[in-house]
Amino acid sequence: MRRTVIRGGLVITATEEIEADVLVEDDTIAAITAPGVARDWTADAVFDATGHYVIPGGVDAHTHMEMPFGGTYAADTFETGTRAAAWGGTTTIIDFAIQPVGRTLREGVEAWHAKADDNCAIDYGFHGILSDVGDGVLKEMDALVGEGITSFKMFMAYPGVFYSDDGQILRAMQQAGENGALIMMHAENGIAIDVLVRQALDAGHTDPKYHGRVRHPLLEAEATHRAIQLSKVAGSPLYVVHVSATEAVAEITKARHEGHAVFGETCPQYLFLTVDDLAAPGFEGAKYVCSTPLRPADHQASLWRALRTDDLSVVSTDHCPFCFAGQKELGRDDFSKIPNGIPGVENRLDLLHDAVVAGRISRRRWVELASTAPARMFGLHPRKGTIAPGADADLVIYDPGAEQVLSAETHHMNVDYNAYEGRRITGRVRTVLSRGEAIVHDGEYHGRPGRGRFLRREPCGYLS
Image 1 (cartoon, one colour):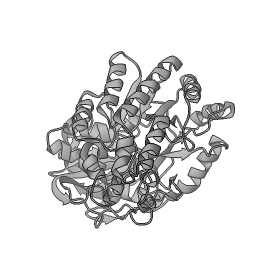
Image 2 (image 1 turned 60 degrees about the horizontal axis):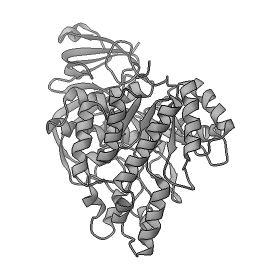
Image 3 (image 1 turned 135 degrees about the vertical axis):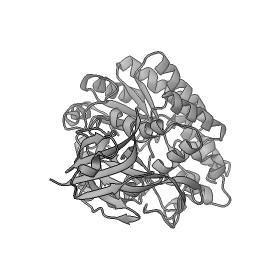
Image 4 (image 1 turned 30 degrees about the vertical axis):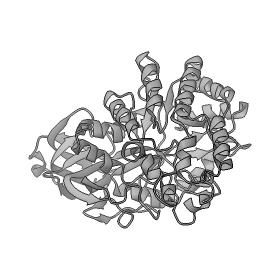
């Protein structure tokens, strides 16, 4: 048995903060005791966390490694992306296995296993992306739920690529209502957006800033409203991904206050970036093209408020990096051809801690948003997302006073820019344990491809 001790830290979970020592045996948390008890334990490794926080490893429930989009692929592989995640204190990701149009859902899952298995440095799971709903796919959903893939994403955007119409969405929701799966929705009115895209291009508006203008906040709100109504008709829960607009937040808040099982997620880019970035001089705004798009700064107040009231329950990254050179540049003369996505898997935990420093959220809410809530939402809690005996020893020793400047020169993501370039923040990961093994410590990386395990997930923990 391998024993590891973390002593002298402030242990923070979603529900409490205590000065404590933590004992790890092999890959599991064995005990949490009063300070000083650890001095009597024999251990193979001892980490002094005095003056530091000890928090559960981050759970990023929305990543896109090696995702095909717009004639190219997301720049991070499962190897590079999970290594970057580890550097940033994230010890679990859930990626999206895409069903090819006209093919089976199973083929998509097998393709993603081929990409991820033996390549991940941290533990990982999959959601399914439903691109072509039919009778066979609905039956496949049942089988995959039994295999631990308990959530499925659909798109009201991207006609001709991932788009599902209302009938397909309703059928998938009905199936989810029967098999216990959670439907995740990209809520934007893609049909209307495509009209506005064509009109903008016909008028000669090709710059990146028009990406935000054609994807109007009301088209996010309308789709969010429609998805909620379909979920109510189907009798199934709904999780709305990457919520960015005040009006969409209002739709989710109304549904939740009426008692419906509707959940919302936002991402750091919507909390810390704005349309001003999308309108950067020259073609620089292409770096900030993602969907849903960045919004005017006044939308951020609604997002932060909803995070405090739990009307938005999770902060994920939607990490989908495309290099500026050679990838974002595909849309230099046509904003609609800029690959949609922003890198961020390495920066989420630090950015949210900076929000703690700024007084926007509490320390416990920080842990809840970044770790506990996504673990519960996607059937991984209490194995992941908490510090308790029996849980996986995914632990982060965090230095709350360290200062750093976010930059492409120092990050570990496989992309040639950082969306938060030059931002000075307070707080930094010092040590990361993944199932009891220190994979990052004092500025050195000790992880390796293939040590991450595929996670079979239970249904959403907020519904039982």
